[in-house]
Length: 356
Image (tube, rainbow, N blue to C red):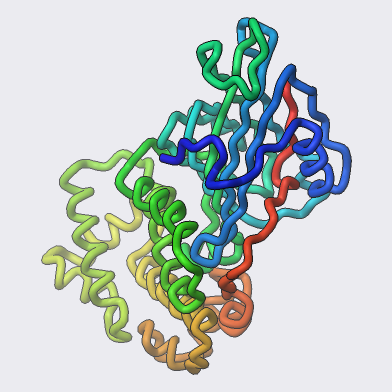
């Protein structure tokens, strides 16, 4: 994990500079209570063509109990700035309590959270450091408080295009293999020369890892045997969905069970086998359309429809619009994530900082 004080050469900012940066980005006053001592580092960088930022804050408190540092994005801030993206937030140092949409999460070092920037969110951080640990921000007889985060911004439309749904914000995951891979991918991207052609494919890896972390799970209780059987059926669907002749009867035959039992398993999950097949076909089509926009291949939309198991383009377009809310052509033309070779400035409008 990143632990350097200067975040790879980013110059330290005093409290006035930090507050000025927040207010210039937000376009209006941000309520911030001045601490006894302060030092902050903020470094934006390009991660596979996506906006990423490393942030570190250290401040001093005369309160021996070390008062919490509160960061709040209110309903008013949400309505004013119109943000339309998600944040992937890694806890690099310290601890953070996060609340969004009535979901509470405790982030420790190595944990990762998904934050919906279009929803209010509150962070509360409390840290203790031994006196003398950092003389640049410490005064005698005071507590030094610090925290460090790595953030990645994902456009909402790109998330929806890749996943086929909009994930719920305010959720966190403890350190897992997927989170370690995603963290390393973002961190290491800052150490390599930007390559727009490579970034296109690296972004697919980013979205796949985010999906592995935050894809919704089925909370309904099912027996272990039924769960294993349904998992096997899902594999059968994935293997055969590109065949236009593939349907529930073929699923039952290949799974070795009756069609009635297949329908029962899907009914217990509030769907049907046919809708499940169409859903996966549309997810695959959205992925191909997204890649078409990124690579600029100009592949005919009808060809993509046929490649995803649809016999009729009109039928495909109608189902696609019903699923995603817009036509395949609009998706292909507007869903691209453009690789950015220049570093983008950190947008402090995402948050409203308060210290209490």
